[in-house]
Image 1 (tube, rainbow, N blue to C red):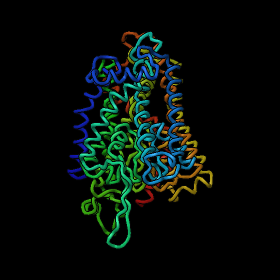
Image 2: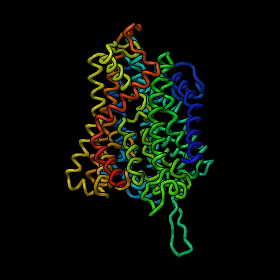
Image 3: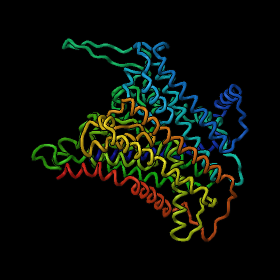
Image 4: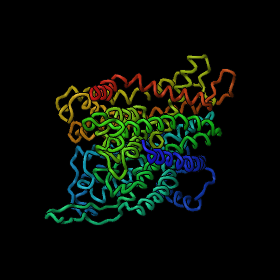
Length: 570
């Protein structure tokens, strides 16, 4: 890594340190119904929405009602988005006269954007009309991100409340998340991006005639506004096929760093929200520390792996000379960013539930791509997606105190709530459901000739491509190895099912845990209580997270990235 790579890494860390606590404490006020900045602007808007939709802002819901509201809202959302795609050829704002999207692709895309996955089996500039992009996909970018946050807030309420049968109101939480957090931040981010040369217009594509007598089509669209919520909401679905590697989405080094910050700011802010709502900020900092260790470890690892060139690059070229003269592994990377910042972007994108990439992960070194895969296998907690990162880490915190209780005889409690059999059954379901979907569907696909036909590269790398696809879908990430062809009816369908399982089969146990803990009386700490706001607990939480992933996924990691690495280095 060069000094420039380290400087850019430190700039991201400093920007997060300066902004995440402020945003986190602000969100705590929003979800605690406390007076917060912007009330005079947001409150009238929200009251109008409540009246229009018949919502009682003072009414709260039990966890089952909260979950049913989430599921029904999601059902309506996926149907509406599917119809937008299928009928776009008959709808306005379609200057390129694009036809309706084919049914398998429309299904996959609707489910993908609903679940905050944003897996894309299509080229945005040649498939989706402006209306579909702006009114369909972008709206879901807001709503899917908000859904993740409100589930995390419901779990926080269950943990911090005592003897409460309710965990909040889904409709109020969703409205406030969009109006007070996502929309204002997206507007500010879009202004910064457009001022930094990201395009923003409603025109048709431009056909440019070249000096050689050919022609080139330059796409147009409302890119700045889509890019803002794409990154801020850890969505990842770009309007262009090249995603954040496209110069119209990510034109320069500044926008690249700014978009990395957008990916990370809400996931890193939510632990502060948790600590503030719990009345114990140090509890949130312990969770934050575990997230930070995992993110920094993976980010630095991928940057080192990609900036230190493979010995196989160039005959007789030494490792040091290769890294110096060639800039490391630049295959599949934009020269305007370089290997180091590109690696940091993709590591942050896989550490969150963001499918955005500014370079092709398929062309990373075997171990570099393996770390990206490992990030997703962590369950998106490093620091995870908007909301999903926090509730994932809190579930692992509950698991950690239970394991600690088994090992050293401590009472399994978390913030004064006893962790008993009912909660642990739900925790085990949460931990197992995603690996079951990812590895099960991957194994089935490898056994089918139609599944193997989508693998472009034989051997260990081909296995990694397949595992990466289902891990990405099941963890609602959305990034992919470019050598894998997911645009088939079989993969459109199976990957869509994995996205649904990875989203809702996880959210429901989280809400059930919130309801179970919320009904319990908070008990005071005793001599047998394990402190959960210390560096020791943050270390335990980090270790449990890594061990759970290791026990679950190590065999497939060994057969994929590790085998490829050793084969290429013999």
